[in-house]
Image (cartoon, rainbow over all chains, first blue to last red; front, side, top):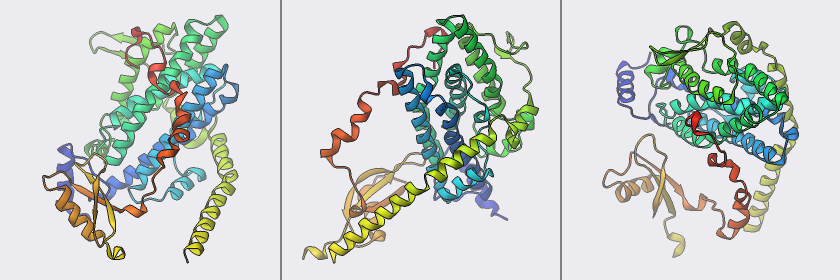
Length: 316
Length: 95
């Protein structure tokens, strides 16, 4: 049982919009929740490289290829910022990686969908990164300092990701020929609903929401953020001349927001459970890359040790 | 005589929770504890900080100014990493 006075002081401190730093006292639940959430976020950045990496060698021009490489490179960096933030809470990087590789840890389900055409790369940048930005802008104000600072840095870099995606969509959907327009619409149909699912279960069904909002780990509810994303994205889709694959979507004059149809939560839960189209493939690819990189990690350590020994000898 | 000099420490101060520690300067101290106490006296006399990091200067490895060109050259021709590289029509709002 944690000291009630400490818990109260912690809550008051958070309520006054103060940031918690690594060496501050924090409730066990706060630490555990953060470790889980930041680790999942980090894993998502890392696994998120795979669907896009699929198109690096087949990008339609050198310009697009250079941009895509840069974007995927950024995602690796984002994974690093987040793993580092997570490590301030007293967990080891290797343990986190192990949980990802064994399938024990979760990552964002969106990355378990395949990228079947080049238009998917446009749709991912525009929609998936767009949804991630809505979530991450909110998380810049999370109560845990190291997480908040990682979010600030990531948001700064993320804007290019969304804009390059939208530019791809303009080229295909607005300026493209009939086949390209069709390709853009099909990609949009594939990514629209999974993007809405990125915000997680609806507030009424979200298990941890209440406590996380009270601790200000989360600053906005899943449904609030989802609505914000829909409101931003619908005009962008209209500009492109794309049809939103939701017959219930319509502007609601009285609320000042778009109404939209019910999300297929069965699909969401299946993908979370591991039964999405690419869950197995993603983990296999990650594991293969990790195993094939083992000799590089060993060689680097062996080299460092050797250099150290040489220095010790020459100093003696 | 020079061997008896106290080691040099680099001092990093967090001005308030939520912000990162920032390099404030350096000082000599016999050990880490004294370095923190001296840093408190030198760098936080006017409430400049809520947290102090001290790191032995000899433990810091710095890049060489002479390497500047080849270290940062790769970023020179990658203007597409900046959001302003992409033209987004004003009709679709901020992105």
